[in-house]
Image (cartoon, rainbow over all chains, first blue to last red; front, side):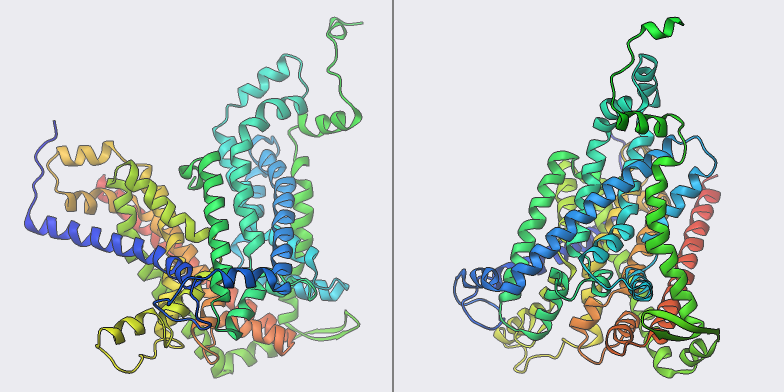
Length: 271
Length: 309
C-alpha cells in the first residue's frame, strides 16, 4: 500500500501547471506538421488557412516537377552512400574502441566523435575550401563523404554502447571451440549488433537525406539535394507545392519511425 | 605434428584469413580506414580553414601561391560593428532558445517519468517524429502559421479580434518561435534518457517517506536530471547558434545571424578570408558557451551530491 502523500493546494497547482506546459509542448511539436498536411490538400493556389477544398493536385505536381524528383533521387543516393560509409567505417571503429587491446582506445573514441562536435556549416566550409585547393570540386561524392564524416559519431556511439553490454565471453567461447576471430565476429557478435547497426543506419540515412548545413557547401551544382532545392523553393514560391513535398517527407518520417519501432523499439533510440 | 593439427582447420578463403589476422590481434586495424577518412575529410580541411583565417592568401589555379601569417582578417572582423551585432544577436537568440527549450521540455520529460506505458509511448513518438522530418519542412510550417494569411492571423480575424493582419513573419519573434519548436525534441530526448534511468523505486521511496509530488520533483528528480539538462542545452545551443534555415526563412532578407553571414561570405561574396575568420569565430564562441554549460552542469551535479551526502 502506498503511504499518504502530503498534498497541499500548492502542490496540486504546481503539478497542474507543469502538466499543462507539457501538454502545450507536445501540441507545439505536432501542430505545425498537421497544419502543413492540411494545407497540402487545399485547392487554392496560395497558402492560406483554413483550406477551401480537397485536391491531390499539388502531390501530382511534385512528381511532375523534374527538379524536385531529381533532387529526391539525389538525396536518396546521398542517404544510401552516407549509410554505407558509416556502416563500413563506423562499425569496425566501434569494435576497435571497445574490444581493442591497444593504448589509446579512449583517445580513438574521442577522436571519432570530434567532427560531430564541430558545427555542420564550419565542416562544410572547411571541406569546400580544402577541396578547392587540391582541385576537388563539389559533387555528390564530396557531399556524401563529408556528411558521413559528420554523422559517423552517431553510428560509432550506438554500436559502441550495444557492444559494451555484450558479453565478450561469447566470442571467446567461439574462438576456444575453434572458430577464427572473423568467424566468431560474423556468426556471434555481428547478429547481436544488428539492431544497433540498424538504428545507426536509420539515423545516418535521415541525416544524409536531409542534411543542409554540410550539403549546402559541398553538393554538386548539377545534382542539388532535396534540402537545398526545398530551401530555394520555399523562398521563391507561395503555392502549396512545398506543403505537398512536406507531406511526402512526413510520410517518409512515419515510415522510418515504424521501421525503428519494429526493429529496435522506440526506447532503443534513446540509448 | 602436434595434436592441434588433427582438428580440422576452419575452411576459409584468403579474404577471411586476412580479416582474421587483423581482428585476432585486437589492434587498432579495424579503425584505420575511418581514421584515414577523418584525417583527410575533417582534420586537414579544418587545419586549412584555420590557416586561411590567419594568412594573406593568394590563390591561383586552385593552389595557394603565397601565404603570410597575418592578423588583419581577425582584426578586421573584430573592429567591424556588423560582426558584433550579428554575433551578439545570434548568441542571445541561441541562449534564449536554449532557456525556453529547457522550460518547455522539462515538463514533458517529467510527464514521461510519472506516466504510464501509453503516455511514454506517445511522448516518444511525438518527440522523435519531428526529428525525422526535414528542418525546412518544419520551418515552412511556421511560414504557413505566422504569415499574413496564415493560421494565426486568419483565426484572429475570423474572431473579429483584429481587422488588419499582424506582422509576425520577418520579426525576431518569428525566428524565436521557429527555433524553439524545431529544437525542442533535441532537449527532450536527453532529459528522458537521464530521468528514465532512475525511475520507479526512487519515486516510490520518496512518496513513501511522505514527500509531496512537488517536493519529490524538487528534491529527487530535478537534481538527478542535471546532466540531462546539460546535454540537451549543449545540443540545442549548438544547433540553434549555427543554423541558417530558420533565420533565412522566418527572419526575412535583413535578418543576419552568424550562420547566414558565413553562408553569404562563402557562397555569394566568395571571400575566403572573411569566410574562414567568421567560421572560426563562430566555432570559438560556440566552444566557449559549451564549456560554460559543461562547467555549470558539473557544478550543479556536485552541489546536489553535496547536499544529498
